[in-house]
Length: 123
Image: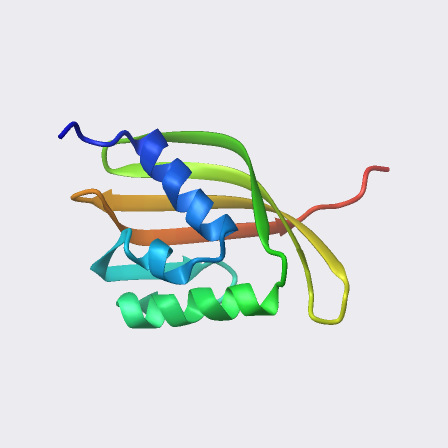
């Protein structure tokens, strides 16, 4: 079976996020995976901890959706630029620019670093 390209992997990964499918997302992570959301000091380590945080992130932002802007990568990593949209539980709309730097090993994610910047309305 031919090896999946980083673009194919990233497309499947982002589709699982847009489907809010934590089990599908975690099926693409190694057991020793980790997740860091920059701006928050904690690094989540291991599949269980990462899955729990991903589920919290999704439940805290109903309607979470990622619109791809750009994708770069190679055999062992990819960088995905997206526009994140969602609605907070209080009804407030959220729009952020997001960059994910994702390191892979043996076709699975070993580390995900997420950088969020709130989008500002044009002047």
